[in-house]
Length: 238
Image (tube, one colour):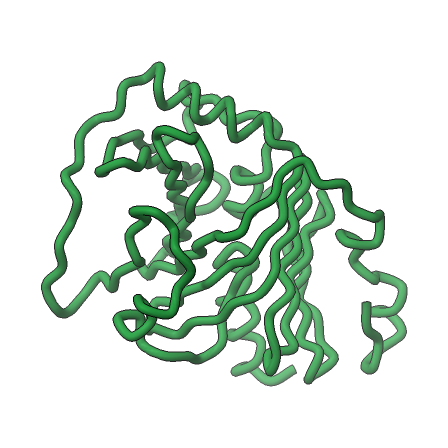
């Protein structure tokens, strides 16, 4: 695999699987996104002014109730829209099963897929017939997919109220370095609306969820990484 394609795969992975292909600039997407209530669009860290919702410390009991509700959702599926740090965007379908399992299938013309099977995260590029692997335990995705989110845990960097959203920031410098994952929940419904992964360079990749269904049963093949086929060489597919 070329260095350019390898770097692309790694950048995609750091976005929770969702990691990205070039697209339109973020401001142009506002009118095209499905309704998300008052979920804010992701914003760039540099350049231009932006309005920021009032931020306050979230009550500990409210935040823990939200975390407990999210942990109790053992499976979900729906659509995602992903925004990269350069304004690139991509969409597709996602599948999540707790603990440790996640899949992103990107809409055409992208041939990317991201699969977490409870042990590893695999980023596949169908066009190049290549796969990159990462231990799940060494990625921020392991926090998102954990059985339980304990807000007293040392991985919790902060909890705050932002408009009608409760924001929970998770990270562990001993495992993920300077990467953190920021989860945004609807304060009333307790539903996960979006998450953002911030890399060591301070660049954000945001995934916004829509049309989410919970309590879904998946076939065993959904989160299967085709290790045997991959080992056979190029041309293998899931």
